[in-house]
Structures are given as C-alpha cells and as structure tokens.
Length: 551
Image 1: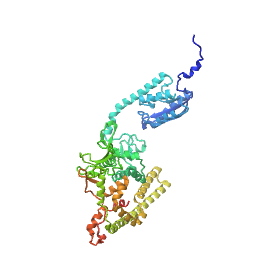
Image 2: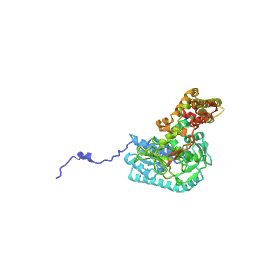
Image 3: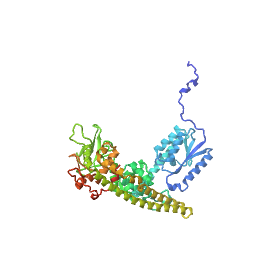
Image 4: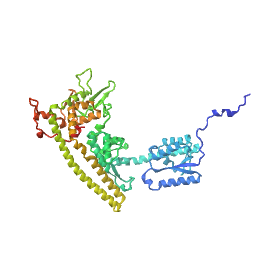
C-alpha cells in the first residue's frame, strides 16, 4: 500500500502560469488615423469618445491615452506614438488591464508582426486587447483568435488597397512628383501637406531660405572643405546641420533634380522640383566622398598612409586615381581604375629603391619650389607688396560691408517699430525678422576684417618665407589634413601622375610657388653674389591663395 504524503511538499515543483493575473480595472487607449485629412475630420476625437463611453459602460477607468495623430499602420515601430505605447507597457510596474482600440486595424496593419505584438502583450505581460466597436477581447482563447483574424484582415485590406492605388502612385512619381516630405532645404506645397498655408492643387517644391544657403555647402565641398568645416560655416549663416544629415545630403539625388522611389524598382525620374545643384556638381562631390571603388577595395578619405587620395589624375586617361591597401602585404597603392596596370605604390619599397613611391616623387616635386636663401630679401619685398594690396582691398571691402550692415540694422529697427505699433502681424514680423537677422549673420561671418591680422603684416611675411623655404618638411611632418591643404595650395587642380614611368607631369601651380623660379630670370645673379633690386617691376602674384601659404 502506497505511503500517504502531504502533497503541499511538492508544490515547488509544479509549473505555474508565469503571467500574473491583472486585477486592476485601469485601461489605456490607443487612437490613430492614416492621413492628415482624417486627423482634421474628427476621426481621432470620435475614437477617443468611443473609448471613454466603452470604459464607463464596463466599469473600467481610462487613465492613459496614446496616439492622437496620423501614423501609417503598415510598419509598427516606425510609429512614434505606437512605439511609446509598447515601451510604457513594458516598463510599467502596474500593468493596465487592457488596451482599448476602436478597431483592430487602428492597432496594426502589418499582419504577422501585429499578431506577434498581440501575443506578447497578452501572454507575456498579461495586458489584454479590446476592440470597442465589436466588444471582442483577448480574455479567452476564442477571443484572442478573433483578434488575430482581424489583424490578418487588416493586412489583407492594406494589400488590396495598395493593388488599387499602386498604379496611380507610380504614374504620379513618373510625372516627376514627390511622395512624402521634401528633404531639408525645400518648401513643399501640395494637397496633403501639414501647413494649411501651403495647401495647393498642384505640387510645388522649391528651395526655402535654408536651401538657398545650403547651395554654398556643395561649392565648399568641391574646394576641399571637410564636412565638419562645412557644418561650422553653415551654422554661422543660420543653418543647423548634423554630420549624419550632411552625409545623407551628398548622396541624395533629389538635390540635383532627380527622383527615385522603391515603388519604381530602381528607375530614376527627372523631378519637377527646383534643383539645388547641377548634376555635374553632384557627381563631382560624390567622387570626393566616395568610399567604395568598383573593384571592392575600401577607399577611406583622409587615410594617414595615403594623403594623395583624390588629388592624383592618370596621365593616360585623365581620370582621378583611387587608392587602396593590400591588407595581406600591408602595402598602400594609388591606382587608375580605367587603365589596366596604371598603379604605383605609395611608399618606396626598402628592397627596391628604384621603384620610387608616389610620396617620395611628390617630395621631389615639392623640392623644386624650395626657395634659395639668396632670393629672400627680394621675395620679402614682393610678398609685402602683395599683402599690402590685399590689405587695402580688404579695407575697401570692409567699408562696403559696414555700409550694408548699417542699412540692414536700420531695416531691423524699423521692422520692430512697425510690429510694436501693430502695423504688421506676428507672421509677417517673424518671417522678415528671421530673414534680416540671417543676412546680418552672413555678412558678419564672411566679411569681418581681422584688424590684428592686417596690422601684423611683417609676421605674415616671415611665415610665408619660412613656409616656402621648408615646404617639404611641412608636408612630410604634417597630419593628413595638413598634407591635403598643402597639396591643394600648391597644386589647386591636382597633379597628373604617369604611374608607369613614375613621374609627375606639369600641372597648374599656385603662382606663389613659381615666384622663386621667375626671380632668377627677372633679376639674375651677379658673379659677386648680389641681386639687382627691381621688385617694383616684378609681376604680381595671384592673391586668392596667399593667406593659405602663411598658415
């Protein structure tokens, strides 16, 4: 006969329902519409009212409401309010008894993903779903099954609707129109925009005030500025830009007048919107910021071991050369993608000194601009003359800028006065106040005269002399950023490289660095070592690059 036991001794080994039963009568509510038009036709308010009526009729206490806006139900976690609802349910120490929704297609139209979320809420968190229009809830297995069917039906409705609307949407895109919000820098007018002041029958997308300023960013990029420098420049003229946004801007073909959409399966359309930059500029900028070449080598800009990246051109085809690293051998190369075999190692191999690398060749090229000390005095006179001319020009420019600033400040004061007396409304005041303020900021940031710099002419001359005498040293010891600045300064249009014969060909050179060549011809070196002083008759060096040489 089996011995009798106290069965309570075995209770610790029994599997229990891990979901705690929620005994609270508190419920939360979620409301949603799909479009801005529905938001304005009381649909959200009706959903909210229905939730309150249902809660009161069933002795529930409605304590929180989520949603209240238009969000597509196609994807669940692209909806900010929906994501906030799920996050707060997970974090809540005391969970709500249920989330009440007018219809389940308001909860989700994603199908399988929506069912997974429903199961997680019910089975893991103990939070039920209630559809108020039908009264169906998830408190029973049958009710949960009905809710799941409704979520599948919502997905099916979405697919059916898309089948009917997709041809029209594709036709809309192929006509050069844009779907969704226009990128940063554009003013979007159309039938479904949020701002009622911008509602119009026909879509119009044009550059706004920020967009007109953002055009400068593309030119700065072509001139060799880094993204960080461009972001700082834009901020000075009133345009806030993050590294992520500016990186995305370089690659967005919308800015050069083109349209692409996933509905078009890779097809590219000429847009009807105003382009910010030409297609040629767009391609040139993307050549600069490109990170992957056609062969699959990683090309990273500003790699310490390859400072000549984006500065060399193939002598055979004229295309810009790329650079890469052979990771097995840890050797860096510059290569033309078009001309087979046109490549050169970055550094001279220790075992084969005859195969001079691109960097040593570049140092040899810089050595041709190293100034002979015998020309120092005349060179100083010439540089003083150039910088003196620049100083006078800057003073004249400064006077014009001061005049413009005075006019703008007077306009600003007049605008404030008219607003104070009620002659113009708040919208008009805000619009023109922001415009005038931005114009003032732009003038001050781009045209401020550095009085200290102007007065310190002798110091600039000495720095210029030192830089020209030791240009090889500055390049060799400088950071990759400094190397690139020197390269851009001396050879503003880049260098042509004959990779097969390992030599640089003649390229456009900044006149500052060809001056010492002309000195020997213009003045001549006498047998006694004296130089004829004819600095007043010497040719003037082009001024735009002179400031860079002294940095």
